[in-house]
Every structure is written in structure tokens, then in C-alpha cells.
Length: 123
Image (tube, rainbow, N blue to C red):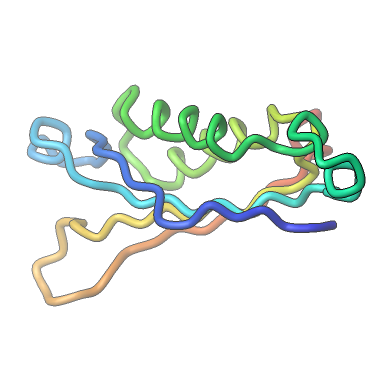
């Protein structure tokens, strides 16, 4: 499978287990790598034969801005479901970055990365 990636997609959300995270919100950064067969799109030069990464990015941002969740693991799962709702996406890798996580020590980033396949969503 070919890969289409969107990396560094930023949106403000209110996810976390602490009251201040839900109240104040924080920035989340999303990376998705979509497994897609791009041969038909390449052959025809037709956007309808591939995944429109602008539209899928809009839907991913809507999820991050949407319902507050306790865990970024849950957020990653919901983002994967958005990607797999695209018929041409066979597999997705989602990384959720939480660079402002409430850790009282210097750190660069906290991430959760998941991989999901279409057949797993159907079961």
C-alpha cells in the first residue's frame, strides 16, 4: 500500500483527566499516515480516486475540538475511526501529541500512537 501522511495538524481541545485541562484546554498535534492504493489516482490524475487530505484534516480537527475525553488513547481511537470511514483507507497510523501534558518535569512531548486496519473496524 502507498502512504499519504498529514503531520503536525494542530487543534485546541479540552481532553485530560484534570479539571484545569478540561476548563482551559490545550493544543494537541495530530499525525496520521493513511494506507491507500494511489495507482488509480496517479493514472487518471483524478482527486476522486484518492483521499482528499484537506477534507479528512477538517474532520480530524472537529474531533479534537469536540467532546472532551479523559485519555489521548481514546482520542487516537476516534481519530482512527474518522480515517477508516474513508472507503479508500485500508489502514491508518495515528499519533496524538500532547506537548503541554501536566508533567511537573521538563519534557519535549507525550504521544500515543495506534495502528488500525479496516477489517478491525468492521468486527
